[in-house]
Image (tube, rainbow, N blue to C red):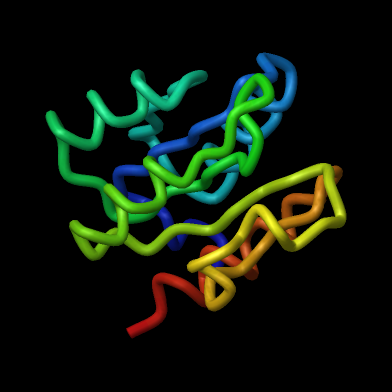
Length: 121
C-alpha cells in the first residue's frame, strides 16, 4: 500500500494553505505525483471541468460555504471522493452520507486507509 497512488491524479479542495501543504506531502509519500489543488468551489469546478481525476479530497467548509456543488460535480463524473472536516456535525453531508469522512487533524495512515478503500475495485 506504500505507493498505491503512483500514477493517480488527485484533486484536493482545501482552503487552509498549511493543511493543503500537509496533505500534498502525505500524498507524495503515498506515491502521488499529480496533485491539483483548489481553495474555492469555483476553482474546484473549473478543474473538474478541465481534467479527469482518479480521486478527490473535499473540505466540507470552504471559507464558510459548503462544498456540495463540488461533491455533485465529482459524483456526476463517478470520481470517488472523501470529505475532510474539522467539524463534528454531519448535517453538511446531506445527500452524501455514504462518503467517508476524514476528521481533521488526521495522520498519513488515516489518509492512506480511506483513499485505499475508495479506490479499491
